[in-house]
Amino acid sequence: MSGPIPTINSLALVMPGQGAITLLTMTDALGKVIATVQVQHVGLRVGNFARLYVADSYRQKGYGRALLGAADKLARHSGNEALSCIVPPSNLQAQAFYRRLGFAVVSVWEDGDLLLSRPVMKEAAPADLSLKP
Ligand SMILES: CC(C)(COP(=O)(O)OP(=O)(O)OC[C@H]1O[C@@H](n2cnc3c(N)ncnc32)[C@H](O)[C@@H]1OP(=O)(O)O)[C@@H](O)C(=O)NCCC(=O)NCCS
Image (tube, rainbow, N blue to C red; front, side, top):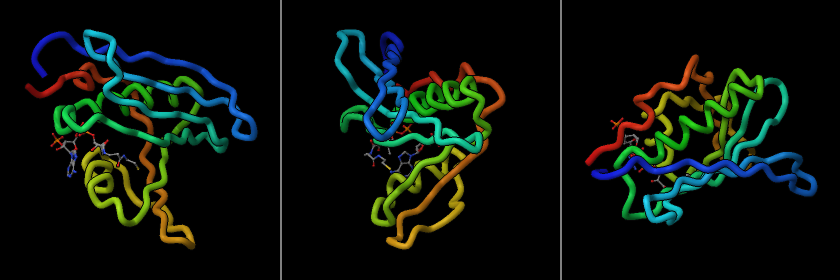
């Protein structure tokens, strides 16, 4: 991306039956939301994230990696040692993306959903926000 680096905003929510969830949104210079992810502490020192989404025209430019970098930092600051997510077996693109970011399959649910995980990063790399033109 050329131009200003997008902003990452954080909103803590308490969802009935789900406990505390932090919604991270990434906005462009005009305040338009271009990417989102939800992060949750699930216990056993594992932070889980869900609903990672980057708007179509912003894909393959580093935004997904940058937002996961922020999710990673949040999980680490909450005392987690690993970050995990669930991916349906049909979502091959997301699986390729997560593999590229160092996630590995740790288990397969009965319905075929994949549980992916990676250790949290030791420190947030400034490179997290290096976006492609
Ligand atoms: C999956 C998704 C979040 C990726 O976001 P993105 O911003 O395009 O990803 P990035 O540009 O940060 O890519 C990071 C790395 O993953 C790679 N990557 C991204 N999408 C990929 C794909 N579909 N196939 C293979 N590699 C991919 C990139 O090439 C990049 O690799 P690099 O380190 O060699 O440069 C985005 O495609 C999306 O929102 N998909 C629809 C929603 C979805 O499926 N979410 C996951 C729910 S489980």
